[in-house]
Length: 164
Image (cartoon, rainbow, N blue to C red):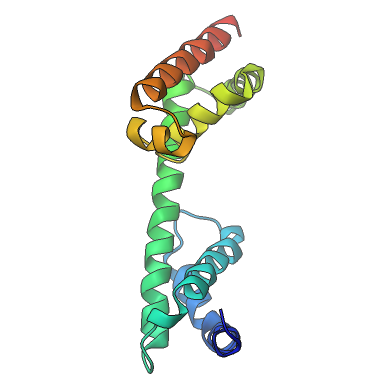
């Protein structure tokens, strides 16, 4: 990245960050306001990587398009995390707040008891939404090995949860 690109990034960040934050803030539901800085940072990382692709005179609309994609990715990640938690935490329709806290604590304890490699496979799959083939690429293993590792990690997690 050259000096011109560095200057352009600083200029774009300075000029358009308020509008990007405003855009994200209006659309950030169900994300918290605390996530806005992280989302803006993610937008600026994409801008930095693709600085030469930004059309002159259309910088703000292009950055809003990036912000839209970043926000959609954050929503999907949040949805996957919640879906995974709901599958792993046994909850009844009438569970109290105390029951939910206990179930979350049990899940945290069960995850902490797993080997780091098992925990990594589960988190990549459920929190980050990677499928088996994507797990294989991320972990530099075969697809079959990824299936086996995911299956075994799930079995170990279920066993730890059953003990709780």
